[in-house]
Image (cartoon, rainbow, N blue to C red; front, side, top):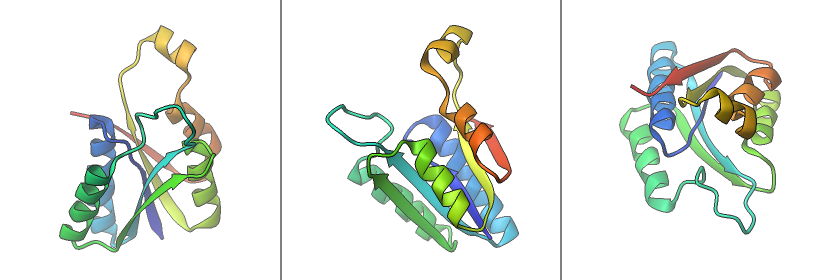
Length: 130
């Protein structure tokens, strides 16, 4: 089985990565860390740069896990990419990070976490940054 972590370069992304690594190690499962963006001309703050990607890959390697980092920029939203992965791989758990939002912020901006909770067919663990 595989544990899937949705990663962004923010404290909540790091919290999700840390928890995913901990669970993968404890369960002796494969870990796949995903960063996704639809791409395009607009700058996307969820898309990580090369130094951050290398930092995450080094963390995974140093942890001694069966782990892989995937980054997608294919015109699909992060939710679509993650749902596709859950539907095509034996994912036992999806780990996502949550950030604090005001009620108005949730209403106006929507929530990727909410979309994932409603869309994926596997258990979801939502973690907050300390």
